[in-house]
Length: 114
Length: 115
Image (cartoon, rainbow over all chains, first blue to last red; front, top):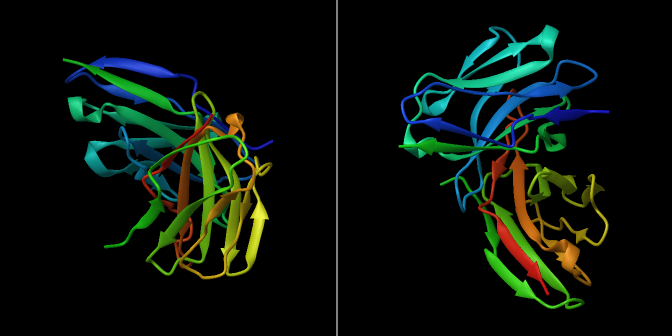
């Protein structure tokens, strides 16, 4: 069955510290991979996406993610977290045939300590 | 400005009273979908549409209906709401084209409470 697993329900980091959010997926073929961010009271906004090519992708707001095929992982990283990064983060996968079949993980809520 | 607009943003209703949540997009997107978001479960797909008059069930369609009479609009209908449909609902749309048919554009969400 196709699925996306985000093992951490919530994470707390200090402002200025580095961040890594984990994502593992189960899919029949290499899917399209995404990270979305949801700020309080808002819809989801795309942070970055991976289709093919370089396995390290850069996104908005200083985020990056690395695709590791052997581990079926697509972890999100940021070298220095800002208080404004506090939000919920969703990893997602979609088939080549269309993003309207996107499957989302359960989300990881990020708390940032001053 | 490209956007997906949902209305209302907040709704409290009583069990059994029919309601409609509207969704409209101004990007001429072919694909649209409804999701519900519940704590610990992420977003689960209710219904999706690949074009006008073409809709299909997602993972949790029970208790919901949709229609796609115009390309821009994709309303979600709850004929007889029940308390287990209390949730946060999101509408999303996707375009068609090279590398554009995979990124979702989301509305701001509708928080529905059924008492």
